[in-house]
Image (cartoon, rainbow, N blue to C red; front, side, top):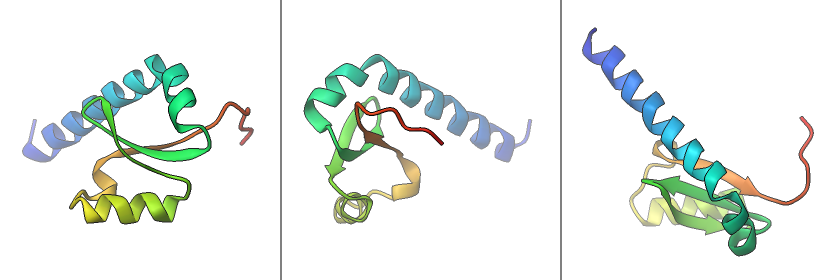
Length: 81
């Protein structure tokens, strides 16, 4: 495997861990972040905001690349795509 493939595999493994953490902690996240956007990194919420623009601005103030974290919208309502 080349470096690019290893980087992609590491990214996918990290994303899977973040998604698993999100699922396991969803009930707690609803109680704290209902109707907010959150950024997840390293198994914790590192920023939150009522708007995506606000979340991105907060991440940039913290010198965090918004593309390097998982973002989710927290709601009890069912979202149909």
